[in-house]
Image 1: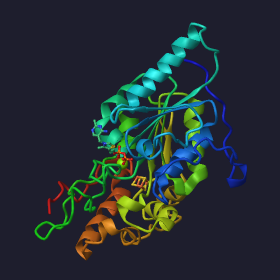
Image 2 (image 1 turned 90 degrees about the horizontal axis):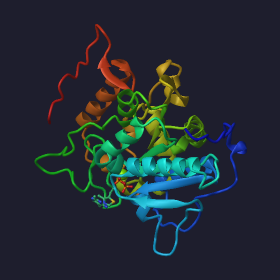
Image 3 (image 1 turned 45 degrees about the vertical axis):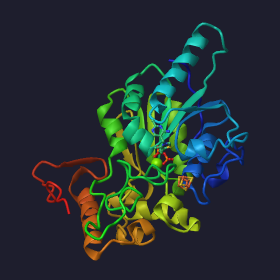
Length: 339
Ligand SMILES: Cc1ncc(C[n+]2csc(CCOP(=O)(O)OP(=O)(O)O)c2C)c(N)n1
Ligand code: SF4
Ligand SMILES: [Mg+2]
């Protein structure tokens, strides 16, 4: 295993590095949180970083002909290939260093993918990358809950009931997306014995997110981070509220913030307070009502959504992480009703 960088934890906003490695030159939408994730990710990683990105908004909108915001070396890879690109790059660097063809030094390898490219199409490649312990690499899945770049089609990560271009509410069937969101980070943590660090993040909690990137890079590899990114275009809200919508997802308990370091789980920030009963979960309606993609919801739909979140916090073995009832408990919702 090649050596890793030793990046100190960022103590607060005033301790954040000033240098930017994702700058102007992109054309993402106003208020795009995925773009903010890119900016924070590479700010935390620093200049000795190679970024690889699969097709999606963060490739297309960041690589307009003759311009790019990336200051560090960056490469595009095919939609389902973030895992393969990460493994190949990390293996290539290792080989070049061990043959003495390039200087032996820690170089961060970060591959990013969207939820479509990661949780759906590239799942096997990511699984492959997380199964190889010899390479230092971080895979970051930025989740805007749709295939956003091709005009907001439903993905396995889209929330129940959301209006997407493939699931518009109709007169006969109001709820067209009947699937509950895939639970990607735990799938990566529980299913891959060799993965050394798995975390969830949200750019609304920027310092926490940057420290998670640094922890992953310090640990080496393989590592995985899943971020939750409000998308004003796909979720249909005013771009000025991106930060607030991200916070509401955490405060309502819909998105759970945690990290699993060498197999040890820690809940972070408001999610920890919710779990310890030091803070009350806000009703999910506070989150849903802010977005046009849920505008067709009836009271019954909101109640159903709330009941699934309540179940997650009250009945799962680990809230947000392991959807199996504790011994003697039950998941009362049982097999899901198809409405
Ligand atoms: C193999 C393949 N199928 C389809 C496409 C078309 N395509 C380009 S970007 C994209 C959406 C990707 O969604 P996601 O990974 O969630 O990233 P986002 O656009 O949401 O940022 C699709 C379907 C493609 N580039 N390659
Ligand atoms: S569609 Fe969403 S993810 Fe894509 S650039 Fe716009 S805000 Fe960002
Ligand atoms: Mg997406």
